[in-house]
Length: 298
Image (cartoon, rainbow, N blue to C red; front, top):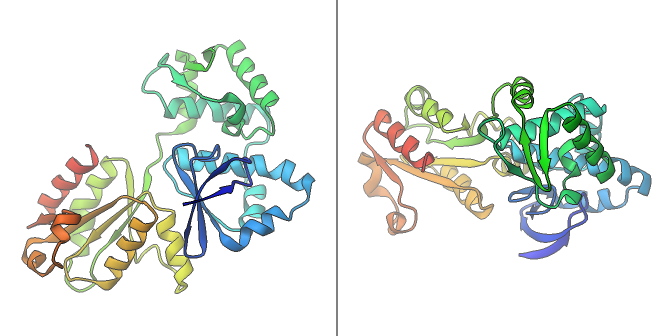
């Protein structure tokens, strides 16, 4: 991997070049995660005026961090700048920004008063869509005064009242995106939707058939769909080239792939497949659903 500066948080990080996208990993916009930016957009963002950068780059950074933190994936182009700027979901008031911090602490804890450590507070004002550290500190002190959080150094806790408010704001924790690729002719998709998809949802993912996610014939659009996924399920029953392509692309993007194949078709897999990828071999979708749940709960 090469090194490159993230425009939105100004950190030098590892970047991987995949097709028409650059994948930035583990910067302050996506700590422990990554986001993708179309290659031609990098210079367009870089060429913006200082005033626009000062106003919008912290918001872009916050958008990336919040989206990846709730399990989503981000693949940006320059055209997304205006969409994000005008989105009604972007908090503007101090009250709305404070709510974002409560929701973050809620996502990272299991009960009131459970400690959540926020490392490098100076790099974390994107948690509240704030433009600078001073505003984040003001929000923290305000939440403390309202008895919604406790703070000792870098350790934060939601009080019982803070937990209740954050829970109401969050409306349940968001599912991570999961694309499922199946052969058109040999796999009963209705059985998968009835038996397998509910188990995937139970494990924190929102499954969607790869075909349903592709409403454009553009190859770049297909790449972006996979780039924005947190998990790919590739069923090799029927030996569909599209399934192999999608799974291979996901592997190249370092997105986890679960391989499956119906037992009657397992003998047709390429030599070495079981040594390298160990696909689940299933007889019926009920059995596969149990395998999937066990795998995702590991």
